Length: 164
Image (cartoon, rainbow, N blue to C red; front, side):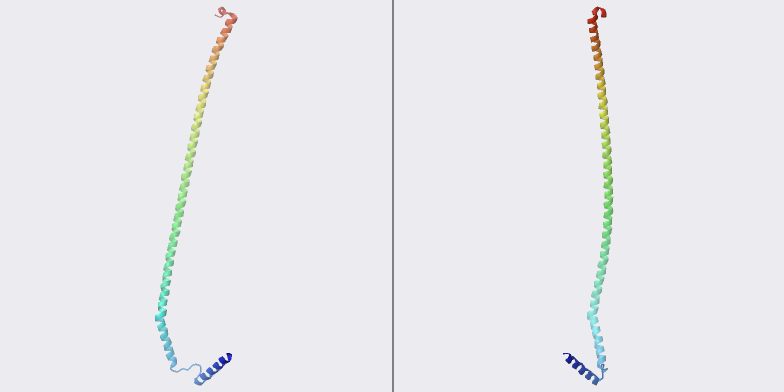
């Protein structure tokens, strides 16, 4: 196989040396250059311009989509920040309401406790008054009984005539 390649290379070298070398500057060179320029112009009109327009359109679309995405992302961040602030404010207000309710409940409980203590104190004083009143009545009754008994004892011991 390598023999064939060497033979073909040798044969090509012989034919080029006979005709004038590697490059022959005859009428085909300008014709080839003209064909190349026509090919470039045709490709530019039919392939490269529509392709570059499609690529540019796609790039514009991507830039626009990215700009819209950034705007939406910024809006969502702002909304999230606003919602967080509103949530914090709502939590703060609820804590204030809870604290106020707890303070009011504590105040009501202490007022009721104080009222109950006053009522108990009043009942205790009333009971003391009743006890003292009953004690005074009992002492008075005992004194009367003692007086009656002592006069009866005196009557029995001394007689009725001496006592009067």
